[in-house]
Length: 113
Length: 112
Image 1 (cartoon, one colour):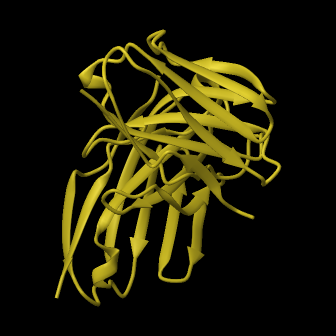
Image 2 (cartoon, each protein chain N blue to C red; image 1 turned 180 degrees about the horizontal axis):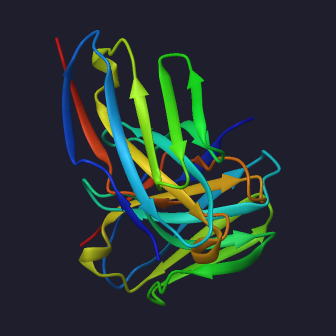
């Protein structure tokens, strides 16, 4: 299994809602990532989990809250988002060392009304 | 920090060869990656260079010169399906650990 699975594929939420994005991999990878991608822009790094511990937070607003329940799962909890947070949220994983590429999921397309 | 530069757009015709250049500045370089991304889809891995030289994989080749902070992706025998965004990405362990930092991407349009 060489897939990173993200759910939901599409999400529409209001600014007062609480929702979560989920990501799962079964490749035994020990590093997982959240990226945000706006239209016609490159992916921007948000968070890095290494061996289930948050190792990098790229100054992301607290309305985004990551969680890594175990080595296969990564969640992104969303609360009180703004319309400018509408984007494609990409999850990725890698083996965990300093070699090897990142494997990306298909992404969750988020629209904040 | 990182500074990753690549051309915004390129055009080419079917069957041709195109070279997409990427320059970078990093403090903790540990690899350069090329990804392809079709509109509305996830990035897919194309190639990886950590040592100087050329890596060839089918119609795609990638070159790295660490001393010059320079890489290129070479696409041969272009096909219409190669129309996509090509993302140059760097692993800079000082800035982002194992994560990749992406350049702005080059949109390649292949015409018949």
